[in-house]
Amino acid sequence: MAVGDKTVLVLVGMTGDGKSTTGNSITDVPNTFVAKNGWQSETRGCSFKDFDIDGTNYRIIDTPGLKDTNLDAEALHERFRGFCDYAPDGVDGFLYVLKKGRFTPETAAAFKAFREACGDAALQHTLILITHAEELEGEDPDDDGGISQKAFRQDVVTDAEKVPSMLECVKSVGVNRIVGVHNKASKRLKKDIRKEIMNVVQEVQISNNGKRYSNEQLKEAEAWRNSIKKGARELEDPDRCRDLLNELSECFHGRKTRDQVEQKMAQLKAVEANFRDIKAKAEAEKKRAEAEGQRADENSKQKEAAEKDKIEAEGKAAEARRSADQAESKAREAQRKADDATAAAQQAAAQQAAPQQQEKPKKQQPRADAGAARGLE
Image 1 (tube, one colour):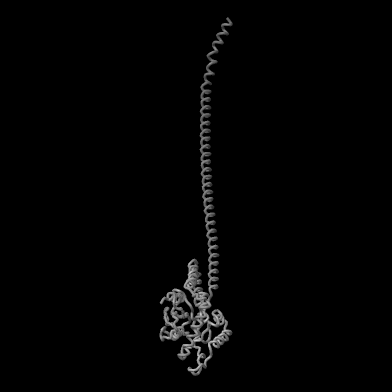
Image 2 (cartoon, rainbow, N blue to C red):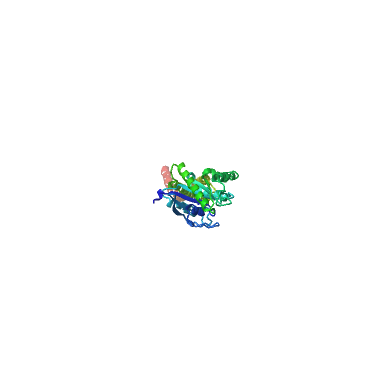
């Protein structure tokens, strides 16, 4: 028979609360699911059993305890969601098993873990089975001396009103979906309890118009987890990445809600965006400073080059002035030498002309005397 033709039930609960034992009572087959007292879960993965009651076919699937001490949150989540392999057409009812007694913070956390793993849609298909409900059985197992399921539910509500986390758990599922379970009761009472569970399962099916909790809804819950993981991987800072993954782990353990995880992710992303903005501004400032430094360096080099050119020009100008002064000095020297030579030539000429002027009158004197003589004659 195909799974789709069966009513599919999934056992969920904390390790040690009687989940697997309750599964055995429902199937009425001893050791269908291995149960073990203590904190270590015997259910290492999901397992199932097909059975029928009065012609109605069922499949019941047992899941690992939500507080398995040997598994981390991620491994436990993967094993827990493995029930979908045995329920490809969806789930008619989640049987959430609680142990009667003190509703501890750990108990509340485990229920939140279930809620976060499967999403709020799962609550529309959930029953709460409370084990160790010994008051259902009277002093004589053969009579009806115990309290009724209705009275048991009222007692649970009365107790829950004193514990806010328990009251929230009860209200999220519904009072009429609570069933007391006594796994050590007489065979007759066990049969009555099993019938009560199946009646409530039928009421759940009717209230949902026969629509099952689908694997698509489980996939949506998984997609949400993957989106948080993706957000964590996108965080550049390893510490912030670890913080977000730890927040996700806290969510699976029921200590944080989806909203709190999403708020944490938004907060970390805002911090990271602010950090990136500061980093970008610092980088831009660094580039600007480097550019200014480069420009200053270029200006300095240009100034040094200009100064060097100026010094070289001044040196060349000084050299030109020195060359001009030397040329002028040489010209003056040449002029002086020329003047000296001219003067010397003039002096020599003068000296040469002086004796000749002295000799010329002496030679003319006799002619004068002779003229005079001829005049006398």
